[in-house]
Image (cartoon, rainbow, N blue to C red; front, side):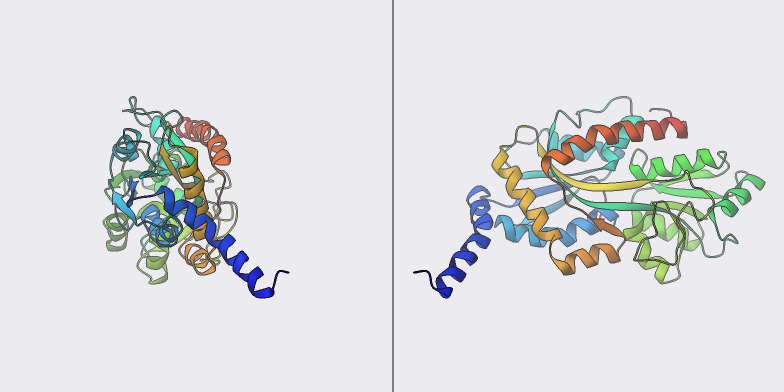
Length: 321
């Protein structure tokens, strides 16, 4: 006869089983390499999720920030790492945008990585210095075209998703602004707040707190719907540019040929973190949209994203370096 206490014990054991299986696999800290500086959207979302993910796998997850060159430097580190489950990569939109900017990349995003799972969608935005006298994207474009070359638009490093989003905006604005790039999101947002630049293209996570503090003003989110963290901010369609839709995403990948048990264990870790109500709410509050995927779903999405961002680069008139 199975008593209530026995049943509860069995249930608790089943809930703990994924962690126990993972703990048998991971024998030392996992290095998670990011192609972004600390304080950016990818860094913010990862640092929210990794404490819960570490609990699931039974080992610390150490974030290793390696910004630069459209995430090429960071990607090369992971592509060349041993496929033993202890080096992971924050695979993002920047990785599918980079081939549109660079003639040569020392790895292949499809061939050299093992997809684990998507974590977060990240909406883009156009923000302005609060002193700029415009109230919509249409008004901003009109001002830029009336005074070509007067306004500077900022982005972080050449070759990532934010930069391509800025270049697409530039093309739609008749190349009437001057693009200025910065090493990190905090540097970009500070430049916007101090008036060094008048316009910036970024992601919500690092920008929302500065918008709420009044240091910068988010003019529009470039997603199909308004974001719940800033429901008063218009979408690009509502702001006069219905064709300007740009969204990014973050995911986890391992080096190619990483054994399947590590992939499954890390995917469970992602789902556990995203299933934690307070973590989900924190991601939403900072401008993200949490949405896990299977390894297979991510593997199918990557080629589609490569094609989509390639078309975007053509529309923006990007020339490869």
